[in-house]
Length: 97
Image (spheres, rainbow, N blue to C red):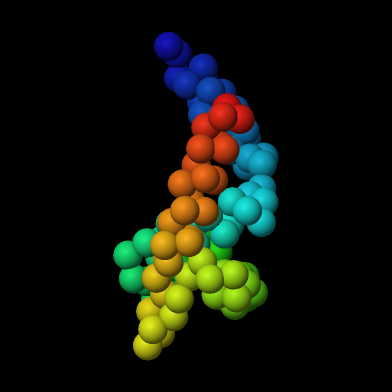
């Protein structure tokens, strides 16, 4: 393949990636729960779930209120209820493909 074709293809892929669908609230909640399956500090959640601190500050209290995540000494861990949510979420996503 000529270099010009390779460049066009790379630009097209890059352009396509820049318009990826934004994650919805449920997707973000699932990402946080996935990161916290094994204990995680807030900073780890921010980076691994690709969020900012403001968003994490908004979502963590909601997850704790619903009993999906727990905080012990600054470390967050997904509860059994949170794991059930993740399992159901993954099944739903698989069915919608």
